[in-house]
Image (tube, rainbow, N blue to C red):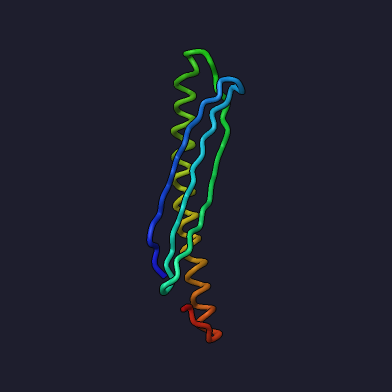
Length: 101
C-alpha cells in the first residue's frame, strides 16, 4: 500500500448574520494498493461565536488560530488511521489467500 496524494483544504467563513465563524477542514487521501486506487474524504468542522466589537477581534483571531492548530493535529490522526486500516486490510486479505489485482 502506498499513499499517492494527501490534500488538506482549510476554510474560514465569517457569517455576520448568524454571528458565527465556521471553520472547516477537508482531508482527501488517495491510496494505491497494487494497481487499484481509492480516495477517502473526511471533513471536520466547528462553529465559533463571532463578536462584533473591536475588543473581541483579537479573541476571534486567537480562537481561529487555535482551532486550525487542533484541526491540523486531527488531520494527521485521520491520515495515520487510514494508513493503519488499509495496512491491516491488506494483511487480512493476504492471510486468507485473497489477492488484490
